[in-house]
Image 1 (tube, one colour):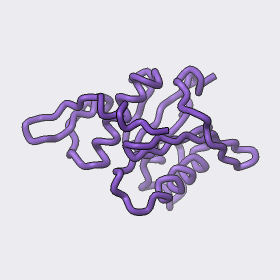
Image 2 (cartoon, one colour):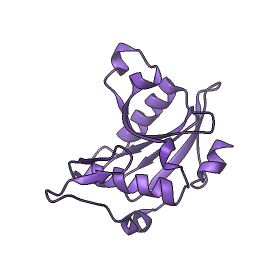
Image 3 (tube, helix red, strand yellow):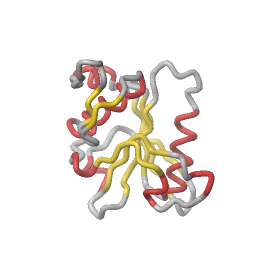
Length: 155
């Protein structure tokens, strides 16, 4: 789904040095192309998908979610959000539009989803947003037909 116009509508707060304000972590972060995507995606989650801000986490290590595999200890999700029962409902992998390997973010997200055993993931480059449901029992990923709201995803 093309969300470029939606994302560009969201204004980002910057400081005098050009750093972007992250409303979830409540800090200013370096303004990289990927960070622009991440910060606009946070606003999209809150505004379009109706995810409560207090349910969103940003740049969290997998170890925070109980993953103790040595290979995964340094890995971090870009954005995640909790469902009604305080379990992770989904993660969002954000990449700059200019990345060359378009498959890499999908492989990364699938790896994280398998490690965390969560039901959904999204990948965005600031232009396209795609979502997938994950069925742990059969290890299958199924592309979503559209972008659900928080309520639809967490039912």
